[in-house]
Image 1 (cartoon, helix red, strand yellow):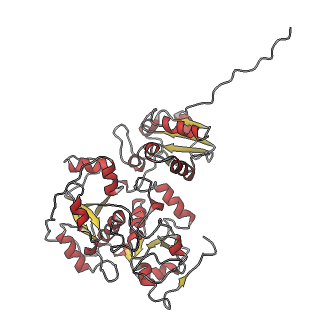
Image 2 (image 1 turned 60 degrees about the vertical axis):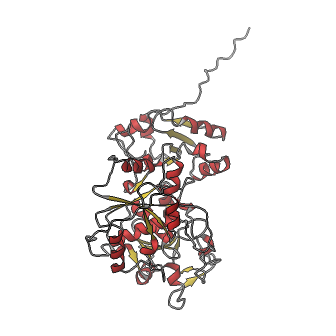
Image 3 (image 1 turned 90 degrees about the vertical axis):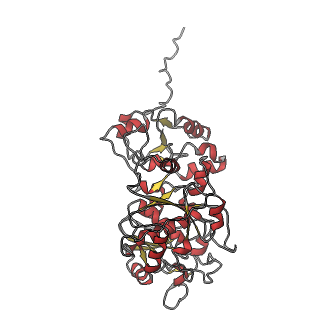
Length: 445
């Protein structure tokens, strides 16, 4: 009787990866590392059970909460766009061994076979001081809802303000929105107090000093800003009235220009605060004016540039970039993007940086929950367009709002020479003889 052929026992593919192997494979182009923790922890905020904040170098951010809050088609699109789905090999980690399981299961359902879990998670990795960690350079300027709640409750969270702080609900000329409800303790900041309604550029130094003192803001005041985002369109009576987070970033830019040292933005703004189940109030609060701002305005004039500097940047494209933060249709001249701007087109020689669906939305720079997109993704998109930290970079849009948001993100990343061209397309397009304009699709994008 013939003896059956002996075959080696079949072993299941490894389901976990050790710290030692993961350390060895850092930088492996065939390995996609996924961090499923909340974005504040990924950006650098210190978790309660870890020695350090940040993430494993090269890790892709994909918060596990998105599995429940995002519908299936959008979820698949996100997994595709972040390079997770159909990657050659995936390693998932979280705060502990159980966090990554749900994502591993979902990936398996979508056909992703090679998925392993790093069971030690962030706590194990962060505990070893010899292991590298990446984080958003100025992560503490992008605050999260839990941090703000602790601060408002009188606690001292990580990176708490060194002195007095003020919280502002920001929008463009709609105090009724603030009156309806707002985050407890917030004051109201109308961007008209910071911008000239004739050309939408920042106000004069004297006007800014008067406005900031009346708002109770001095140079050493910690200012926390947020806005409220709902649907709007370019032809409503007050365009951009609900583009609150963009308004908050515009205010942050002008406050930085004036000289305020510590400016924070609530990530996700009002919407994210409410979605997290936090309270609101209807108490109308009035600021207490201060006698002095404490510095001559502008303390940082380089943060906002005018047309001559914009032309200087265009003349040195090897070392500088004038970045258009506008929609593709605006960029090619199909539309102007605004009901108060007639000409359509772009500044000749600019670099397209994208924005979102229209002049009042920034989907390209935000996540599905309205928070800032993971900063390595933003930086990678910029690098692909030739926008890098070693250059003098100035952002522009129609009148400096969308540009203000991208400027703030570059500031969070620690880029050394960044600005906003304040006049933007509104100013440039008024004189096509002196200011070269292009329309149509560029030869190379």
